[in-house]
Amino acid sequence: QLYRLFLTAKQWEVPRLAALCERQIKIRLSIDSVLPLLRISAAEPRAESIQDACKQFFLANYQACTNLQECEALDPRLLCELMRLNTAKAASPMATAAPGPPMAPSATSPSSPQVIHSSGSAPQLATSPGARSKAGQSPQACEESSWPATLDHAQALPPSTLAQDLKRLLTEELAPDFEVVVQDEVILVHKFLMVARSKYFETCILTSGMQESQEGRLVIDASWAMTAEEFRALLHFLYAGDEILRILAPHTAMYLVDASSFYG
Image (cartoon, rainbow, N blue to C red):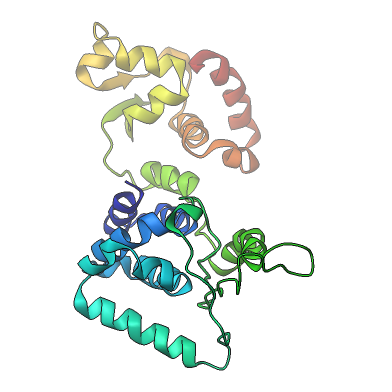
């Protein structure tokens, strides 16, 4: 499900959601999940980063992964590439002289993050089950503790754009579905946001017997002494939050004081 959500976010161009999904997929990679992910991401251009992470995991746990029966179901070209990469890694001056025993599939839980490195390097397996670092921990345990910080540093998430996106709905009049008439000026708004942000508009729009609900239009009575400018200021607060308070003219600010209690 997480992988499908990642692809959907890529397709619909929601970069922050795609980055969050990608991070979680990498963190949760395990012996049980890496081969299915390798297989389904191989033919998907949008999943290149997931494919690369799976390859790094596979190489870091080469013996354990190749011992799995599912490994035989991989595309022969992909399997040959993995074998070539493993050979190149073993021949590298940075490779350890004596690789350790394969990691049993059961020894890695779905949430084990220690084998994915955003830097592109893969951790080495311990040379023996009892191998310990100077601090009394296994090298693998050390990788576990340092992995989240490495990931956060290497893969910054795109900033949230929710507030700006909601503001754009108003300023660019994107797909409005309700009208408010103030001083004969028609102002276009969105039902879902007006309902969520104002009890008054919730009643007007959701109560089926009301004229406003049936016509999709609310006419502000002239006796309310409300100007179009003042109503737009209210809308900017409903859509963009406190941002509007920094640029209000004094007389408009006084209107919002009264409007806040009336519109809820």
